[in-house]
Length: 78
Picture 1 (spheres, rainbow, N blue to C red):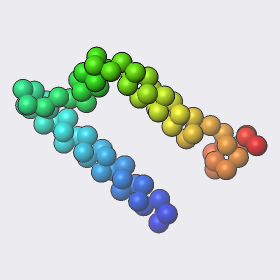
Picture 2 (picture 1 turned 45 degrees about the horizontal axis):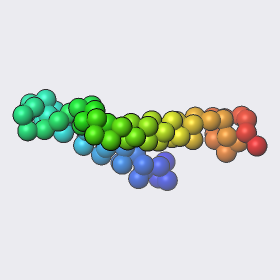
Picture 3 (picture 1 turned 60 degrees about the horizontal axis):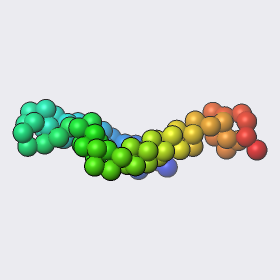
């Protein structure tokens, strides 16, 4: 558990950061963008960014959920 604590704290901090700024964006749409609006605006100016975000998300998902031998939940890989 101790070895996971920095990751747990980081994940909670990221969720808190998202919740605060998303709530502020909904409360003041004239001053702040929501995350989805910011991503859409970035994609409109630089379309390759959408591919990079998808590539990052897909790579992270494969890394986390692939049945690697070292993964305690996995039974495959070699």
